[in-house]
Length: 332
Ligand code: AHM
Ligand code: MG
Image: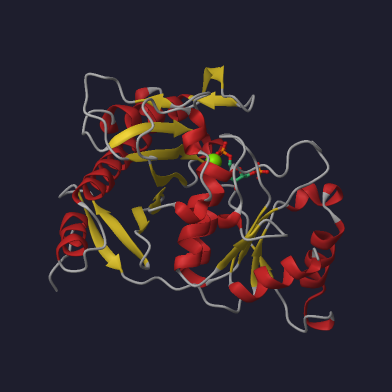
């Protein structure tokens, strides 16, 4: 069987389908190259002394891991000079990084969570990188923070890498979702699955149950019904999985279905949920919808939310369509 590399896949998308422009192709290739470098840095683990915490906090007041900082730097350095970007924003940086004047300015904005699930790094459990691409508004002069505040429905591309037993890149350009596996010897991503689809029905759910006492009533009701199993209102048993790396939990759902929830809760009433709209919820929602799944904040489609702040948080319910619709209907 002929192997299709990411490069070939992108060239075909550009040439035959006209789905993407040259600069977007370059952007995806550069992000993929950054993900390879991050995968290598993670793979060395304790050998290079890179496990453990840095001495810094991010804007959310979370202590950064050394690999959070390194992954962020890798993404900035690989992407700044190619001429495909106008600016970048990251979960790990307070403010956007504007492409310096010495480099040509491109037409895209890149947003990322450089190392998602990084609390898992020290225990050798899967982590990942999540990214989102927006068009930079035209005729604006200097890029400013508010230019990033576009609804998720406007994303032109989204993807994630999972650094697990294999390194995977899952990508959507707005016409379905494809999965690539890193061939470590050759150093390229190889297409291993086209047109990923999330089954509409599932018997699996994913939530951090330790927060149960803080949940809102619709979430409590929904999870209680799942837990009641065969003899409860759902009439079937459900299984539960929680990796605590969104990339790994979402990838499982992309592969065999399920529902992922990180609801709003009463721990910090001014913060709606833990996950970030721009770096986590929007790109994952685009991918999930492109695979036939659904994604809401309990009340509305996540991709329709008009962002007000770069680092804003949001409640997330995503995955198999029928379950997402059910828990969303309990909120009404
Ligand atoms: P991070 O981006 O700082 O790693 O935080 C996001 C992660 C998600 O990957 C995961 O779903 C969630 O936080 C886990 O939260 P919890 O610690 O409540 O299990
Ligand atoms: Mg994250």
